Picture 1 (tube, rainbow, N blue to C red):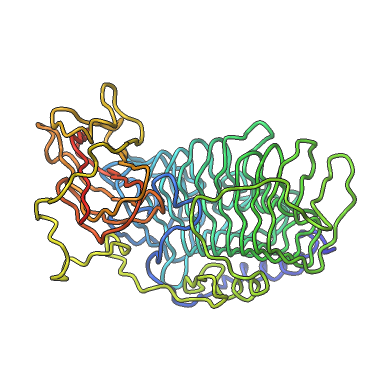
Picture 2 (picture 1 turned 45 degrees about the vertical axis):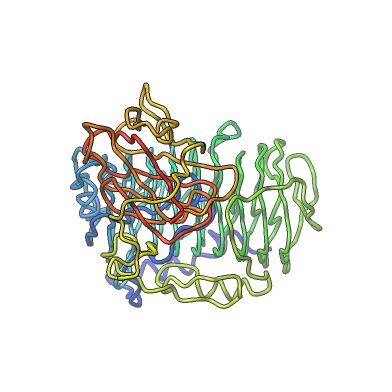
Length: 523
């Protein structure tokens, strides 16, 4: 068994201290300038996760500038992409006030906000001893950043000692191609690298590195905090972690194609009724990589295709219940999204080439060969939009819809609706009735019992509210894919797609939107 992380880091800490004293700045290679590809895993559910796509792009080189960008928006839900370059620390991170933000001086605070992307660009973005705190927020993307040495005790402290921490009704977060690291365990002042609690759901951590910490992360702060879950971990490197890789209390998590190296005490800890689907991972030089530990409230797991390379297992006794030495499934877990599995044997090489910040955002398509992402334009409001407005063969979105309105007779649902309105009002053919969200943003869906081919929709606003709808996204609710984005109501065309549920999501408005009809057509 490997020595605990604190012992293994003594020499490295001395080197880091000398570098800091000398004012050494570590340079990093040039990287992509904007988020590439799209969210994966559970972050594609519940309407999907696109962060600030479609919003203004700003550049920030200090923590204060990040807060200023948040506070300078028209509202707390106005989409924004914040490109970060340089070192963000306590010395350059101040609290900024405004109607569209709620910030703090000792952390990057994403509180009571939505539709935000933070992406490292240029020579890299390093959050040094400064954590990222997400609270009462939704639709957040964090990509290509390093967060290191965040402490809960000692000096300076930030974010309760978590590199990235989420709590209190958080929804739809995608953290991708990032590096989260500490320099020891709790006795050295550190806590978790990636923590979720108090009703945090629909989260994906992909192509990231978590290392040199006593605690990798948790889902649920106590045995009674079971409102969290629907979390995906894929193509991540967990290296030199004592435990919590992750700790799962209640809820459902999917771990696939991760490389776990030197889990010193325990690894995936499924407890308190949790369900973990563990596919095609590579566990190496580790102890008790899966099971229920430190509690008598058991969790469950479904395992397949994993490789256990030099893994040791302790005896079962009391509150120590490892899944090995021959792990077998104790539950079944249904996964609602599509994904491609790399064979476990190639996971170490694939993860080495793709995971972490400043790796060029490379990904894998299940072929065991890392792929470079398609180039994207950071000013493009939606790089995933399949229609090119300059292509003369594209359907003209101003054309009046023709054919049968497939919404008539279909079903519907959506986010919280205003008092006195109904989801069904958007598919009844009556312009005198309408659906409204609570507030200025929300989503409404049309759904069928079997797949329909849809290529055009028509959003009709109720009389007197024309022009209220601002920015929007059209989503394939089955997959989370963004079919179109833009602003204003009317006819919206996109490449025809077969689906059972389509969602119109309003991400910005000048008042309370009133959608009288959500018409759907074949193309």
